[in-house]
Each structure stands twice: as structure tokens, then as C-alpha cells.
Length: 283
Image 1: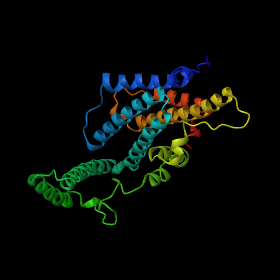
Image 2: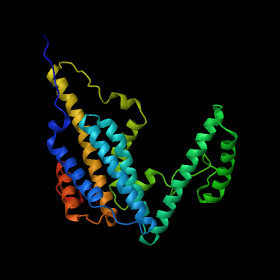
Image 3: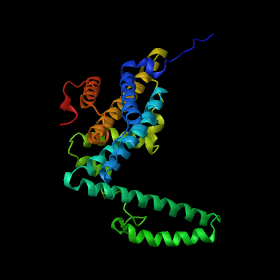
């Protein structure tokens, strides 16, 4: 009978890395769910709360995927976490304008919600499922949008509307971030995550181990494991790093926030990445 090759689950293969995730999730459950968030006294506070909750949900999803060796799919979600961080940095770019930017962020959310309704009704019309009432609603909604969201009108775009709340691309936000490492995150990591998200040819090859002349079973398995480990660790450490940055920026909405704990987690991430100094990723 042929020998059966078994692979231990990711948390058993890399316990030191998953200990970081477990620590983060446990702490955020305590801060967010058990002790609670601060009241929403302004638009900025509300947006910070929304971003914290969204970031934590994304992080928990990444954790589930990494535990079952689906790092490629975890990378797709990590891309969203990176974008959340960039958007929060943009909102907070100028302290005096942060409240105004937060309000604009929320207004754009309502525009997106309206566009989703428009798309759904137009689909109903195209498939012969639309009532006269829905057709009337579509007409009224489009008229209302012209008034409420005229600041986001851009007839040069296919939809006729801006596709971001601030009018800037993710690349632009990364390149103009106050953290000079953001552009490197974008070029080296975010580009890879985008390839996975868009199902590029490269994305189909990540689970494939190329056979070379002179290979034996052990060398093939080891090379495949090295590739998987690199992808998993990149997603795990960077998503944790980005989450820690979001918590730091939005900490005013977490009454029980402990800056020392956050700093210690960042130290652990830097150490796991082979970096000796805290400023290696920040300056």
C-alpha cells in the first residue's frame, strides 16, 4: 500500500504566528463586545466606530481562512483591510477637517446605497420583473440623487459618479500617506492581493508546485510548503499590522484601549518579520 502523506493544520505548523492572531481576537472581543465602544457624538466618532467593527470582522474572516490553508482568499480580504486603513488615514489627514471629511465619507455611503437600488431596479426592468411603482421610484430616486449628491457628480466616468468618496485612487492614497511604507505595501503586497482578487493567471498557480529535474516526493512537498508558508505568513502578519494601525488611529472610540498592548503586538509582528526596530515599517 502506498504511503499516505498527511499535512498538519496550519495552526499546528505555525503556532507562533497563530498565537498572535488568537491574542488579537481575544483582546478585541474584550474591548469591543464586552466593554463596549464610546458614544457617537459626531460624524468622525461614528465613522471610526464603523471602521473598527468592519476591520475586526475582516480580520476574523482572514483568521478562519488562514486556519484552513486558504491564504490566497485571506489575501483578498486583507486587501479590504488595507483600503480601510488608507481611508481612515485620509479622513484624519488634517485634524481641523476630519469631521467634515467624515461627513463626506458618510454621504458617499448613501450615494453608493442609492446606486445599488438603481442597479437593482434597472435589472428588474431588463428582466421584465419591474412594477410601475418601481419604475416611478427609479425616476424619483435619480432626480433626488442629482440634488443630494451633486458634489460627487463626474460625467467623465462611466457611471456618471465618482468611484471614491475623496476622489483619489488607492494608489494615490498610498503614495500620499504620511506613512512612507504605505506605497511599498501597495507595490509589493497590495498588487499581489489584487491579482488574487481579480483571478489573474497567476492566482491559479499559487496552489501548484512545479516539478524539477531530480525532484523526489520530499523535495516537492517541502517546496510547496515553503510557498504556502510565505503566503500565509505575509497575509497573517500584514493584516495584523494594518489592524493594529487602525486601532491606533481610531483608539478614541475604544474606552478600554491599551496603547502598551498595541505597541507590544506591533513589536511581536516586527520580530516575526525579522525586523529589529519599530521604525522599520513606519519610516
